[in-house]
Length: 120
Image 1 (spheres, rainbow, N blue to C red):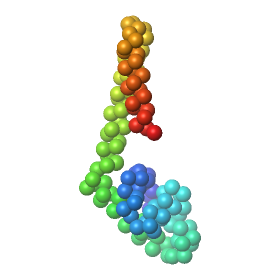
Image 2: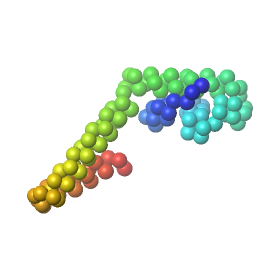
Image 3: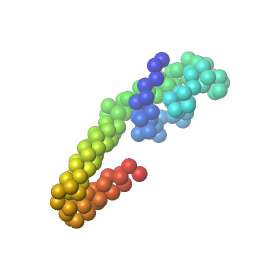
Image 4: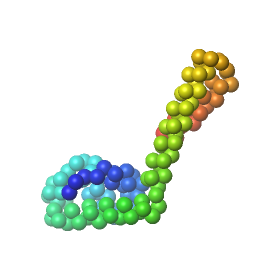
């Protein structure tokens, strides 16, 4: 079973909607990088039981994303903010080299602060 790191992102968005065991197994498998056999041994169940729980959880996470789209929306917002930040940097360079406008500088600082605050 190849590990798909998208599952970790989806678990961040929708993990609370999984059962406790599904959440735990997803965390062990993806975040802690334990094998199915290791998880089974630690939990006292069969490897197949762990595999089934992980597969069911993955399926539910993808289904929720297909219906709700929160992770994709967050990715699009992050991409857009990166574009805004790149353009703000260009405006700042132009301002520092050409016009030296205090108002433009203040606006650049405010925009950067707003973008950075979204990352916290």
